[in-house]
Length: 106
Image (cartoon, rainbow, N blue to C red; front, side):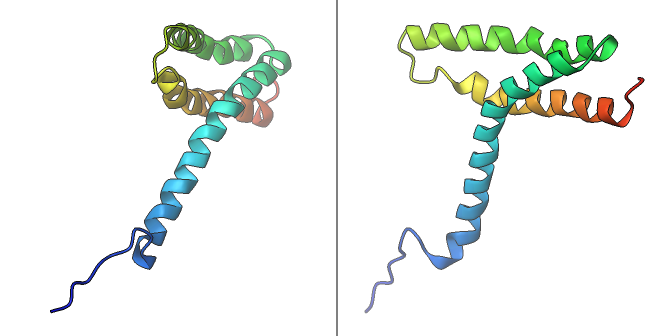
């Protein structure tokens, strides 16, 4: 009677591991890229487009303040809201920048 053991890094799991790794890299890239995109949008855009781009700050400033307070209090989940919301805010601001590039007079 042979017992078949399965290794942790089975070849059949490679696509799942690859997708999870790519997803994690994209999430963390969003955390890093959002402040850069936000600063670029506030510097580059004018008028109504700037105000629309700045609307993301109404959500993200409280997120970063809450994360900072949680870090100060020793929480192990202090970056969770920044990790979850920064990529979404980055997509929002990136879309506004893309539309401003497509329509410079709008």
